Length: 264
Image (tube, rainbow, N blue to C red; front, side, top):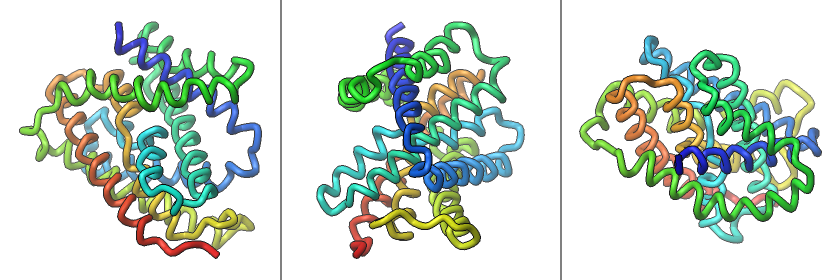
């Protein structure tokens, strides 16, 4: 029951952020396209390694709070435009993840699962005073909801013996390698062949670092896993794979952005 409540509040905030982000659609075009690239390549990598597993979608989402929280460790070195790009990409990522749940896993969605995931996001998108609610809920979700959810549904059930399983290694490869390649190559390609440009004060090297941080995905990925994976053994493998991928991605992202040149 507590886990369902935590999930409801988290997806309520996602709905608020998605609707708020759509108020400036032009600024979201390149991050949104990059989010798609950062979802498709990890899914392709996972499916190519485990074609029969239903857990492919767990390789796709990015945790807004985890990624932005890791970015904040670099302090004033990170320019506001870089933070905005990551935040917009992660919100777009969450939106597309909801679309994936609704399209590919609607038959697995029980009524209660629908209410505390897609239903909560829909409610959030319809609420008034979105900016104020986001300011109130963001610190609560970041410092209370997400740590509690991860502690209950992930850390308390981690099985290190499953770290070398095919599912775990596939998730690690998909998220650590697939995310950064999918996001950075998509950005490079669309800037090269279209009229899109990198935002002011955002370099390609910044987007590579953002790609690494986007490999941090626990909350939405675990919700998807609990909806789609029926085997307890496979669910255990998903948990440890997501945990290791998040740690590696976070470390790589912080180290990369720490060395990234400052935009002029």
